[in-house]
Amino acid sequence: MPRDDTLATASAPPAAGRETVSARPAARLGWLRPLLRNIAALWLFVVLAAVWWVWSADSDSTYFPPLADIVRQLYDLWIVGDAKSQLTASLQNFAFGYGIAAVAGVGCGALLWSLRPVQDAVSPYLYFLYVLPAPVLIPAAMTIFGIGPAMKVVIIAFAAVWPTLLNTLDGMRGVDPIKLDTARVLGLSGFRVVRSVVLPAALPQIVAGLRNSLQVAIILMVVSELVASTSGIGFFILQAQQAFAMLDMWTGIIVLAVIGSVLNLLFVAVESRVLFWHYGARATEEKG
Image 1 (cartoon, rainbow, N blue to C red):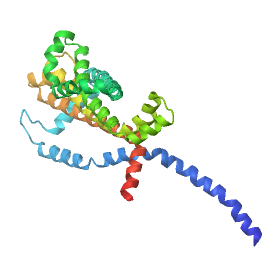
Image 2 (image 1 turned 180 degrees about the horizontal axis):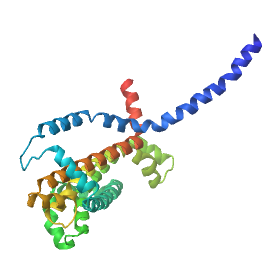
Image 3 (image 1 turned 60 degrees about the horizontal axis):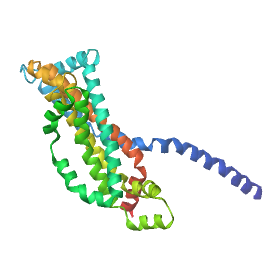
């Protein structure tokens, strides 16, 4: 009997090791679960698309063609046709504008938080610029930068920077003062306090600002191309409408909706990966 107990005890660690190894892939794929949940939640979209397909099948309206015709035209233009170049131009402007807004929003928000007198002085102007509709600046931007990509990038960046900047500033203001005092007592430098204490505490609100900025950047990407442009998906939709090419116009609208949805899903996946600790802590608090 002692020998049997010894053998049973000796065999236990490998089993635990196998269990740990088998659990690692599941842990690595855990960040995909929110993305999969969002994809599964598309059932209503599938139902509405099916209803649209059936309802419009016999339509002879110029303005509301059958969805089957729109899908065929979408394939001809955007999959095998040359319309992809319009989408490439739009996404380049979006990427530069949103990237500038994200970096400038987080950087300026952190800088203003660390310089309290400057923050108090510029806060009224920040909120004035925040409520200023970006499209009204397009004529001025056209005058200064022309109608090329630079004008679109500037308009996108200007409109998208404010949600990130203000959320960054508010998130850093909300950091627990006790944590800041403890970090200073431990002798941490100002940079290390921001990196190790302030940014992690404010990160959920910063990410929320970045998500709002994403939506604003997509909207301004299209608006800047509708007003004055020679390329881009907004330009394509406007040209199709003016030429009464309604099939082409609908394909542009659908492609734009798909691009916006894909960008949002990608952001949600990255957000879940970056803030997994925050969601875990919140779930623990709710259970408690």
